[in-house]
Length: 335
Ligand SMILES: NC(=O)c1ccc[n+]([C@@H]2O[C@H](COP(=O)([O-])OP(=O)(O)OC[C@H]3O[C@@H](n4cnc5c(N)ncnc54)[C@H](OP(=O)(O)O)[C@@H]3O)[C@@H](O)[C@H]2O)c1
Image (cartoon, rainbow, N blue to C red; front, side, top):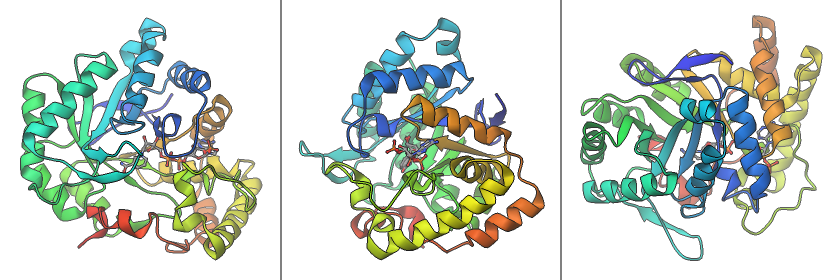
C-alpha cells in the first residue's frame, strides 16, 4: 500500500481511504455481511482510513464499523483510523433539517460517536456542513477541546470555502478538508485547493467516481430505489445523464488505450493531482474495492493526462453536484 500524509499536522494514511457511507445510507439498501467483508478486505489490503458520519443511517454506519473492527485481526484494527463527520440533523423519515455546530452539541455528538464506534478516540473529527448560526471558530474551538481531552486526535473540515478554511486554521491545526473532487467536480481548483496548500492542509476527496456516474458501470437503464440519493441528483437525471455518460464514453476510450478500467482511471486522475490528496472510494462490495485498489497501479503520464483533459474538460459536467436545497448548505459553493 502507498501512503500519504494529511497536511503538515495530520496522520499518515493509506493513499486511498474507504468511504463507508453507501453501506448504511443514501445509495439504496446495502448488504450488511458484504459491507463488513468489504471493510475487512480493505484493511487486509492496507487501507487505514475509514470515513463515516454519525448521521449515515443515524448511527448505523458507526455501529457497522465497530463490528467490522471488532471482528478484524488485531493488527489491522490497530492500524485503522476513523474519520467521522457530525452535525447533521435528521428526521425519523430520513430528511435533513439543518446542522448544529454549537460547542455543547459538538461534545454531545462526539460522546455518542465514541460509544457507537466502541473506541476511546476519533482520529479525525469534522462538522459535515457549517452551521450558519454558529461562527466556525466556536465549532472548531469545541473540537480543539476534545483534542486536548484526548477524545479526538485531529481536526478536519468538510465542504467549506477558502475563507472558512483560513478562519478555522487560525483557531487550531487542521489536518484535512474533505470535499468533492473528481473529473466532473473541479470547483476546488481555483481557490480552495491553493488555500489548503498554503496552510499545509491535506484534502480527502470524495465522490471521485461522481457517486458511480463515472465508474464505467452506470447506464441510462439503471433503476434506482426510492432511498437512493442519486435519484434526486441533477447529474443523474434526464438530458444531464445522457450528456454525462457521453463524457464517460470518451473517458473509456482513454482508459482502454491505457489498459485500465474507467473507474481506475478516474481515481488515478485524482491521485495524480497531488501527494496531499487522498481519494475516499465508496466501494461497498469486495469486487468494487478490488477494482478501486487497481487505480494505485495506474501511472498517468503527461500524454495520458492531456487525453483525459480532452475527454472530460474542466466544467464539462451537466447538472449541479447536489439538488438546489442541498447546494445552499455548501459553504464551499458560497463566496
Ligand atoms: N464530506 C461530505 O460531504 C461527503 C459527502 C459524500 C460522501 N462523503 C464520503 O466520501 C465517501 C465516498 O463518496 P461516494 O460514495 O460518493 O464516492 P464514489 O466513490 O464517487 O461513489 C461510490 C459509488 O460508486 C459506485 N462504484 C462503481 N464502481 C466502483 C468502484 N470500483 N469503487 C467504488 N465505487 C464504485 C458504487 O455504487 P453502487 O454500489 O451503487 O454500484 C459506489 O457506492 C463516502 O462513503 C463518504 O464517507 C463525504
